[in-house]
Image (cartoon, rainbow, N blue to C red; front, side):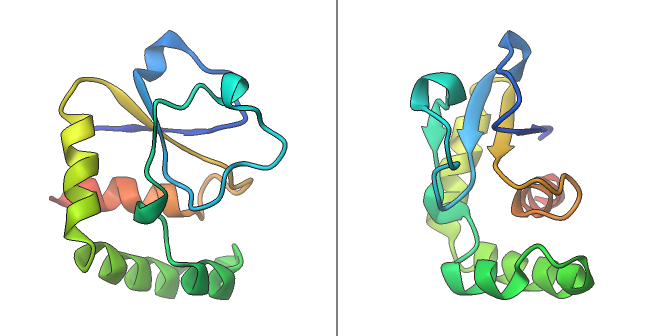
Length: 115
């Protein structure tokens, strides 16, 4: 299953397909009209504790990936919900993080590819 990744602040495109927000918090300063999010799966995002521990620190990236994957393993219902949404055609996981290489959407996309 192949999904695209995109910052939610980038302009939406028809090529995005279904836009799925995978952050626990709504992106700061962005209206729902501008975001054009079709589905918001806030419970697939890392827990608040993990998100705050990580703090987008690249030095913690390897451990963050391990911990977040463990959370995903324990959260089968929401993973199943995401997989069902992805079965409908093309989809883009959208996220708010500035760092495009070290964020939860990157881990989530890799996790889905491993299923």
